[in-house]
Length: 261
Image (cartoon, rainbow, N blue to C red):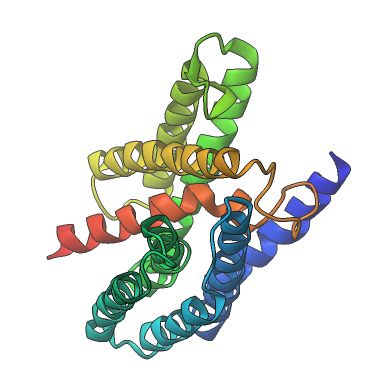
């Protein structure tokens, strides 16, 4: 418990500070997070018996990040298509040495840990991006906190027993409720749009955050590992701490950009 608390006291201000500064600081943060998350995902793949393509995924990740940071959004989609074709081509040329499961896992490694997580940078770059990013982060944390507190006190009905035997329906509802409360606090203090928008974002973030958490739990359970890594004392790895944000941030980014358009 002490390690977990100390890690949070050090890690959370660092994460929020780099996000607040933006520019090259958020770029550095995203680079470190995506590369570490990719490495952890690959290690989980090895536990699943997969052959993981470290060199190839690292190369396409570097290409993606360069295009992301220089603002070449048209090349971002091209990077995804190129990686898809490369994966399918390797499957076609090396089958059965390269299996469909192996190809799919390495394709997912890039999409999940790099493409989705790097939307943290894209969200921060939007007009009012700082407010939106902080809103997303705090609503995800509120969801996790509410689910834990309510689930521990009142949890009776298991949410997904085969994936996470401690998560309950009551906890899930508690996470949603606290997310809405925090969103209303943000609306009261910051405003800028209607309370309905904040309410919708709170619901989307709370649901996606919990699904992201369950997905990573299912991945670890499939591989027979407790944590995705050991980098953060008391918390596990990068994926253990950012699994909820990985699902929430892209939804907020595209939701906001579509509303603006």
